[in-house]
Amino acid sequence: MVSVGVVGASGYTGGEVLRILLRHPQVQIAQATSESNAGHYVYSIHPNLRKQTTLKFTTIADLKPCDVLFLCLPHGSAMRRIGLLEPLAKTIIDLSADFRLRRPDDYPLWYGHPHDAPQYLERFVYGIPELHRKAIGSARFITGAGCLATASILGLMPLFKHDILAKCEAFVEAKVGSSAAGDTPHLSTHHPNAADRFARSSRPGTGIRPRSCKS
Image 1: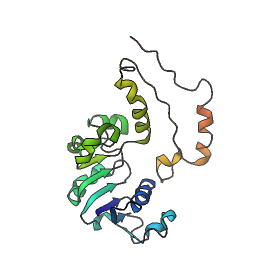
Image 2: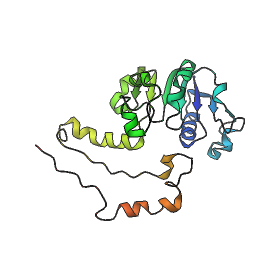
Image 3: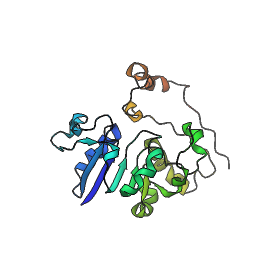
Image 4: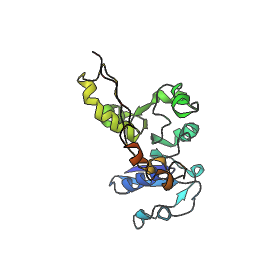
């Protein structure tokens, strides 16, 4: 039986990790943390898990060692805590964007802030099994790939593999539900502001037109 802890288990990502792992016959969820819901039953935040677990949320400070630790924290939080969490598990799987990129200089460019633990970047394996199955199997640190990145990479991979797009620029237009922004409300995900976004972006002339390939 594999002992698992879930850090940041009250959010959307944490709730899905709990739902999947509770149905795994070889997994025992030892702890699930939530700083704002410590002491409350997990199913009080995730009603779909009622009658599936009697686990209560704990705090990160109360975490005990386990085999695998899932980090389901908001972007920017895992990198600040990785040094403290590393000794607690044989394997750490981070589901935020904190360890997806390899170069520290890319974080200010794409995420607007420097990386707090750049020494860990090379230690994380990018978690797409279709690309890195063997490395994932033996890795201690694994980073979950983003939903849009995964869809784009898997869709384009055969084209690059067979040299069809090797000399071209590829543009990907993707649509994602507002839940991808997490459970913290923002103006950009508030329904009155987001309700017609798909219709507006789908009107003729609003998309990005790809440039032609050059031989």
